[in-house]
Image (cartoon, rainbow, N blue to C red; front, side, top):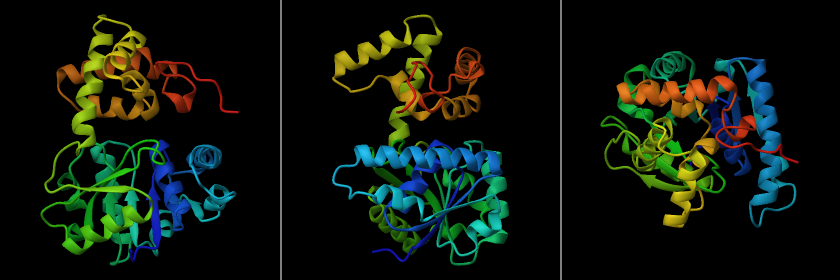
Length: 287
């Protein structure tokens, strides 16, 4: 069991929306924050699509459970209102260190003393952010995989200042929302998942950007030779190209070159992945 009941999720992108929906689906009260009405309108669309997805793909779900989840989600562009009674804040804002740091500086003065802060950062260490939280003993990382209802891991990683009771509470919360908690014993950039996944995706992008093979053929080789259900560019499209672009843009010279290739050939053309209807592949609108 967990004492966490009221959860705030900051950021309504693909994964932020999924985290909020999964939490509400599991019976928790959820307040979702983003910076303006346009972002919140997109979030409402994502929640509607998730109702259909959960109803179709989650085995054994009672009729109407996915639709009921939406009734437990409150959307707001008022950060203070979002966190006023939060037991846990899950931050899923863009993967840019400065944006995350600024977000925590605001949170520090707005959230009650009881509130635990958790970052869903894909690559940043919680130590990169803890000094901006005002409560390093109540701060850690809680990292989810995309398509959360199917790929239900939750990596929990604290700093040397995270209180043991806080760490345990977040592990219990992750289990309560249907995740498989993966406790990390030490800080590691990329956690377990992205320590494996990011180099794999970068290698695939390097092959395509270097003109060695087409993305479709790179995917084909990986699927046939390993038996994997998806190739790297199919995974890129699920993640969405914006997050990999942001990560690569902060890397070394070779990483920045891959970021420029993604931007010129895909992002600038609106090919952002499944959510946009096109990325490395074209996707038909959901019925």
